[in-house]
Picture 1 (tube, rainbow, N blue to C red):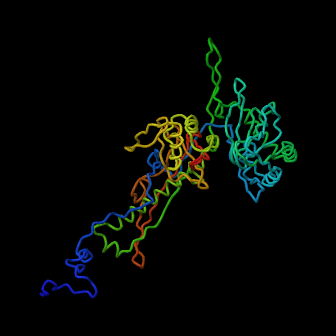
Picture 2 (cartoon, rainbow, N blue to C red):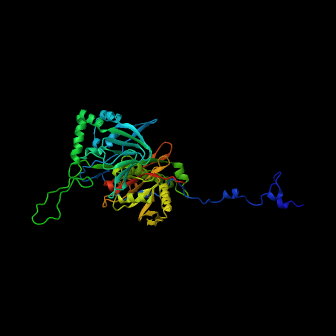
Length: 475
């Protein structure tokens, strides 16, 4: 038998004739081929709707001041608690979130006041407060939900609102002439409240001149003529005839308006000169390193705009503009209430899981909201207002999150983004890339900086639906 057919193909011991290689292998061929490759990919990149939808105001001096009309109404904040085993205690400094104690500086007295609260657990259906009864206690809701129940026009019971973790009720007795409850409070879930009898508070007020002065200042402000939003009244007359003497008026301003300073997110990008010199084809290594670094920086910027304690939208929304879900999941009723709290809502902002939960609630009711187009993309909507996704909104305990609704623009007295353009070595608006030099190890360094902040021009520019349950019920 001739062996010419096998020339150049070495026989491998134990290998059958049919399995022997008869052509150039793929591995060998790839050594001489030009590989087709993609640009570097990155999973962290999201839609970043907030950055795209906010109108950005130029802040040339690095600080933006929000001037408002003088307001006598003191916002109601959220009190914080600490839990040790089954015992719950209020964090004393957070008692300043109760309007009458706002700005009170005596920490020792707040500590004593916190110690006078007694813990009271409640179960679903328990009546904590009965309408028409004397207000003789202050309640701090440490955990759980309670319904604010009023009497309708025809004697029926109506849920007027929901109180949840950190809310407080009963301190309004200071400003009510008759000192009686105008509503009932019934537990919607099990939970815990801390209760302070009014005599215990009065005893401290009798002993502390500073506390008495703070109460008098609070009562004086509450009696000032003011509009329905708590702003100083602008006196005027309407419907008069003849030579009627018109009232004089002026618009008073806040003496200490809030100022927003631009925040910064920075990193130092490092690239070896050997990489930049020898491995720049077909793709520019420096360019792609910088592109992905900027993407990560913008993701962090959006996270800060949502969650930063100083200027983040979720953290700085007024408590008067926060509402609770009626049943847990985000229902059309909840979205309607959130929408009704402000004029000209531009968009909702929600975690993708919250959007899915809202879709399930709509499906249960046989509702199929019509989507809308935003910047060339089709997105879900409710009442014609787009629902945009934002994965920076936190999910607490893997179960609950928040949904934001906002009006935007300076001309609308809404929410605006703040930045400064024209920076040295500016790469994108509000973002600069500055060459820092080459060190002894031949490493090139670039300082990448993004400057930004956000401002809420008036409180009702943004609202928050809280304690939104995203889990799916199988009942």
